[in-house]
Length: 219
Image (cartoon, rainbow, N blue to C red):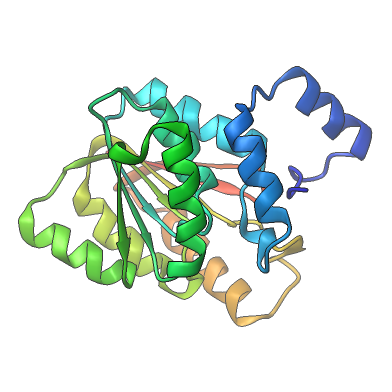
């Protein structure tokens, strides 16, 4: 029903789910609905969603931006962790997929915390940059891989010092590792990984959860 964390045998992964994940019923229902949809492999795993919710709480985040929302699992997980007055901007280009997200945001009672932008994410980032910089505590990037470097450069100006940029799929895409793949997506992700590896503007750690999640703390 979901993408497993990397390199875990099925019985170990089952143990992880049973002894770590505290998935709210609304997230479980969303995951089940999404599993029947085209592109279901794009949904983050429940343990990754819980990890990101924990990051929100550890940062004391109140403002989040997400690039690539799909059916809303990650945005819902993070919105549930936000304070009552918290705000999350969700960016996607699909009305169909985000209609599912809206339904579950509403069911969970967090729709008022989420502002949906159905347009290219670069357009939204440029609009936000025209208003001010350093506005966000956390950014989650899971959109088109060819623009990861462009997203990163703009988010460096939008995420506050000490804030976090999280980039998804930095090891695998749809269960295919990028190291041995020469697809356009794999090449784009490897360029991004090279781009941030020695970037002195951030501290980083590549975490083997889901399909690889790179955490970039803005210095």
